[in-house]
Length: 114
Image 1 (tube, rainbow, N blue to C red):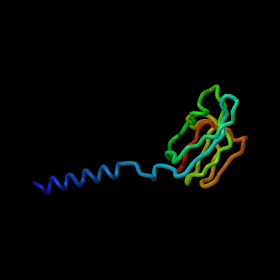
Image 2: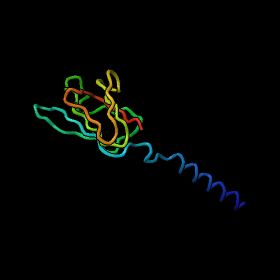
Image 3: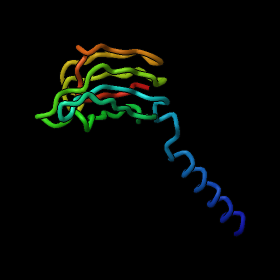
Image 4: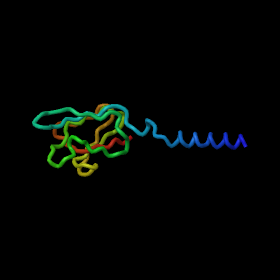
């Protein structure tokens, strides 16, 4: 009986360990961008962003806000920026480890394709 209990506990622990998210589910590094608020130019960033998940930038999400621009990808994943929220609209890919776009690359959301 003890063997069965021990086996059940071991299998339960293994199942839990396998189902927990790991760092493979996140891009490692930082993603920087520029945005405007109240007439000021500000810098924003995402640190170790979730991979394969659309991230709408809070700073650029509202319809009356201006889009973010000048993306700089310092993560280990390809980042794709989108002109609209929810990763809709036109897209622009940025290579990992230093891909960037100029002030003409305007976006409201991003996904990391790791």
